[in-house]
Image (tube, rainbow, N blue to C red; front, side):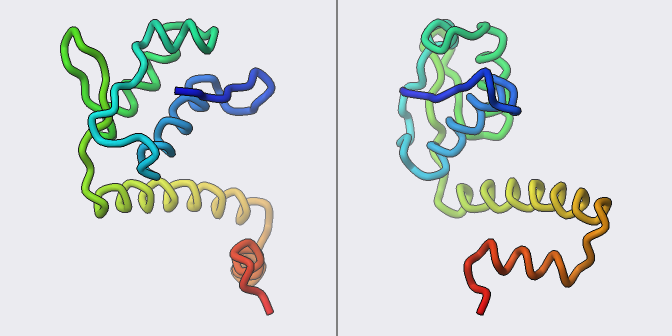
Length: 125
């Protein structure tokens, strides 16, 4: 499994791994029961700490996106489409709320926020 991580990114290495695997699971790029690389193997391939990969996998386990088989490794969990969508929606809402809070602290009002959102969606007339 090819992941692209960068030391130059503002996101931590753990977050970069987590985001990329999560996105591949939610987009169905990684099928149910797909065997993820071992923690040590992925850490070696990416030249990162085993702890970094372990923490990313732990987060995915807690989110129910992967499961572990003792002595066998980690696998993509079976998720009905509605669950995939619910996870994606919840993550989007959380991220959007953080952006909105920051924008309001920076002095943007509701009208400005709506205009920006409309432009971002590409639907502005």
